[in-house]
Length: 86
Image 1 (cartoon, rainbow, N blue to C red):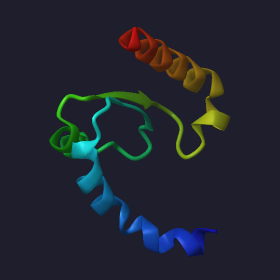
Image 2: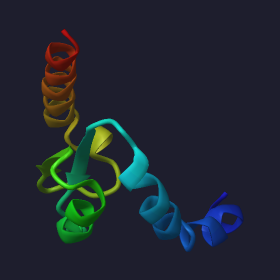
Image 3: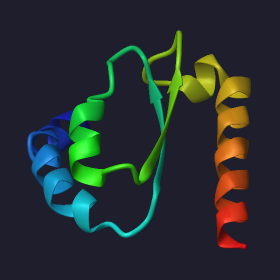
């Protein structure tokens, strides 16, 4: 699967640059600190229309490495979204 999707990885940043500015919803991101989030680019593309949650001490599999922490962040974000909808 990795070999078949490798070419697409080099196109993701181009798609993000096109699509993020026109996406008319707030983004709720749960990122890991293993690779720092390029928040300068995020601010440039989305302004302030995002919520960034950073999980420490994990990498590609936070759902396996720290499921309780991930679930807590998910519940908080879902609760915020529900409140914003009402």
